[in-house]
Length: 294
Image (cartoon, rainbow, N blue to C red; front, side, top):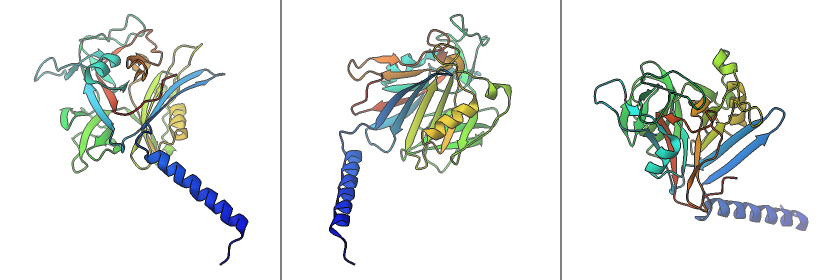
């Protein structure tokens, strides 16, 4: 078959563009992380979104408890600590709050007077594993996010025992699967239908792109928060094939290291008006240039 000169030129341009794109994606100088602060009006939303390429060897993910377990055989498996302090201790460049949790002698009070304070004995609702060491099992069936030794991520819908034969290395629990197979999972209870601050983690179809999302809420002039349906739609729009809802409300926090000053900052606006202490966090360490949080 003979090709016209014009068609040959078009094909050459397309091949060149493809080559440049592939080179950029594989370039060691390209950052394995992207950050976006999405602001919408009428209604007001403030959404912080980070996507991480787990396949990049310069990336590592880790689940970290707030503080040490206060007793060896008791019901409490961690102590509460703010996300930014967990991140600073562990050397994370990005961190979000983790699982829903219970804490000793604490009522769920919103705002500055919240009972969720640093150092209080606590335990997450779901499964928790750090560097291959399981440190909490749920009492009932709970979904969870798993990071494997092959640097991929997956969601397990409802488990009560540690998964086997998948190379689980880090595990953090959540309460609702938001997206499954690229489709939203519907919930109709009051918790799902209310607009609240939310934290979610999503995974693309390959299991290598991890998307972290924190939605501010309970601040009408800034952000009203999202229902679970709205959060599911957001995760799908960001390219997630599966997604899980983590703890929200006053716990919703994203800490991010400023590439210019190398200091960690809480980039969202926690609804307690200050950072809440939590039971565990999901942290990311990046040994590469990071985009600024704007």
